[in-house]
Amino acid sequence: MKMKTSMKFAAVALAGCAALAGCVCGSKLTPEQEEVVGAWRDQTQMLIDARDPDLTAECKSGIAEVDAIANTVTPISMSVNKLINDKIRETQAAAAWNTYVGWKNGPEANKLSGDALAAASARQARLACFEQGLTLNSTDADADALKVFDFRQLTSAKTRADEATLDAFLAENGSEALNTWAAALEQSVGTGREAFYEAIGVEATDWVALIPDLTKYSSDIADATKRVSSLLKNPTVKEVMIQYALGSLGQATVGDGINVQEAGDAILRLQKQLAVTGEQLPWLIDAIQASE
Image (cartoon, rainbow, N blue to C red; front, side, top):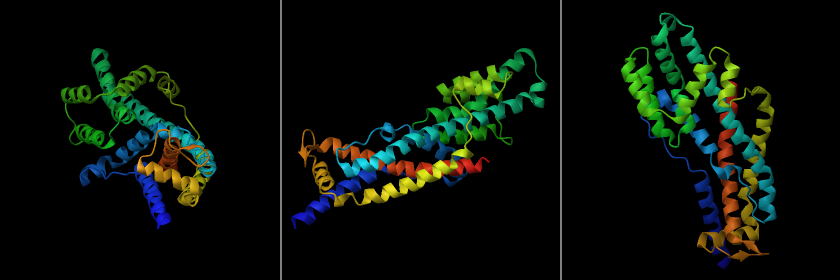
């Protein structure tokens, strides 16, 4: 009976870690909003997830079986997080550049000159970078998706708002990244895309060439996930998670001096890395293939 109780406590602890690591909350958007800005929200959430310091932290528990898995998972998590950030930033930069240059070389800009052209150029640069700025500064993808929905309504060809309304919206809903990117866009438009990318710290990447590595990462993460699911067979892991679930932390140790707090935290980080990276990889591969 004691062994069954211990196994139950350990299983509950590991399940709790998995729930914390892979919690996915439902969308707060209406079906109409989801259709318009769902893709923007998903991309932004990917970037928010990639900022979690647990995803690039070591998962050294002092338990050989756990650390062997972490030695594979953590380097992949670190690499994928950087690639997610790079891919989203490059995609956003390309969209901003194409939008702004398209306007600059179009009939509307050609009708303007002097102060009128300068004012319109500044406005268009901010409009071109609005969604990008929100993505880069967002901490709540659902809340900011509502701003993007309103923005797209205001800038739609059918319902486009007047300049005063657009300026007021930009002033109220701007971001630090928006200001930085818009200024760089205006300054770089005469010298080329490369100058814009350099000004905002974006480097063009041959994404298709990375597909084989990302596919290998996916296989490694799937294998590691299976290995983690069998961790309860390790008596030290089982005892750590029992004590962790019971709140026996601080200086508590098990086995050969394994610190319960440190080992439990490491296992939690490892599960988070597996859960998030397991979602990031197919998203990244799909994003690369869709852009080709």
